[in-house]
Structure formats: structure tokens, C-alpha cells
Length: 208
Image 1 (cartoon, rainbow, N blue to C red):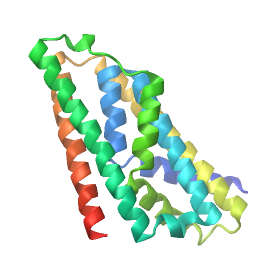
Image 2 (image 1 turned 60 degrees about the vertical axis):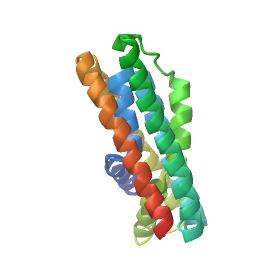
Image 3 (image 1 turned 180 degrees about the vertical axis):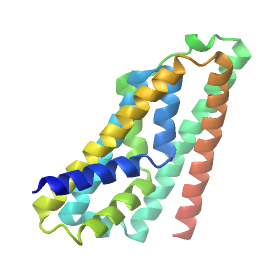
């Protein structure tokens, strides 16, 4: 395995992780709302799943992961998970407003709970699988051998990890400087965007 293969995977992982989607939004929202540990738990979970899917693809599972039946099942599961996150965000937001609770008094999710949520949400996000299967397909044109593909996959994981680490730091920095009004606005926007992503996944499951 050469350094160029690892670096190529690193760059690809960073750029793909930077695309705005439900996991990106969840990491950003957690960082602003709850601080670095809750955001980093989301980011680490995403990087772990990204690496896992890439390794599976490198070992020959790309055909299974890209099958229409697999994509339908994962789309439905992903829609349910992301809908649950969106609905829970809305309920928490409404309870906070109705009870007149100070924004800083809302329970902060732990690193472990954020990590568990991220592992489930990322693993059931078909967009994650599509991205990595397509990337491995393109990478196969210049990477030969299983060891090279696995090295590329770990480079992808490293790039994804660096992006989410950066996003967690930036979001937590912003969150310390935003007023309660803006925190509530971010909760509202995030909740409805989660539901939009869920509807898109349902549409995908029906049309795949």
C-alpha cells in the first residue's frame, strides 16, 4: 500500500463527509446545542461507519450493498431513525418553550449516547452506502489488490474523522456565543430538516 493511495482516500473521505446531510446536520446541531463531546460522539460514529462500509466494499460486498432490495430496506430503516430524531427534537423544543425552561438547563446528551445514536443513524443512511460504493468503484480504476483498497478505505475513515472533528470544534465554539433565541431557531430548523431528509428516504425506498 502506497502513501498516495492512503492520501487519496483521506481526501475523498474529507470531501464526502463535508456534504450536508442528516449526519452532518446532527453533528452540527449537537455541537451548537450541547457542546463538543455530544458533537464529537456523532462525528466519531459517522467516521467508524464510513470506514466499515468502505472496508466491506473493498472485501467484495459492494454488489450486495448496492442491490435494490438492500437499498429499499436501508432507506426505510433510515427514514424511521431520522424521523425519530426529528420528532424528538421537536418535542424537546416544545417542552422547553411551554415550561419556560432556560436553554442552558436542557439535559445534555453524553458522548456515549451521541456515539450510539450516530452509529445507528449513519449505518441506516443509504446515502452513506451509495457514496462509498460509488467511490470504491471509481477508485478501483487505479487501485489494484485488496490490501490497496483496504488502505484506501482507512484513508477515507481518517478523512471523515478529521472533517467531523473540525465540524464539532467549530459548532461548539459557535454554540458558546449564541443567544437562547438562536438556539431555539436552530432547533426548529434542524427538526424540520430531519423530517425532510426522512421523506426523501421514503421516496427513495418507493422508487428504487
